[in-house]
Figure 1: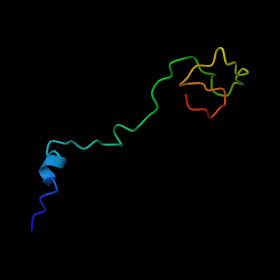
Figure 2: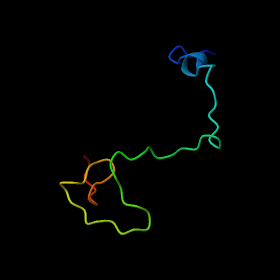
Figure 3: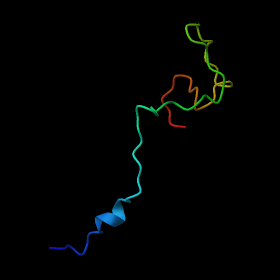
Length: 64
């Protein structure tokens, strides 16, 4: 029995959707916008005048 309030499944999900192979194209973080410290080297003390989102937030949890 059809329910008139529901959309047909063909309207919700398109048939032309392609599957993404996560093994060939694994998710990754986007490239940094500003310079970041080198790996295994101590980072400089965080300064709010130099620190820029999204790569630095001076250790705070405030939402920008």
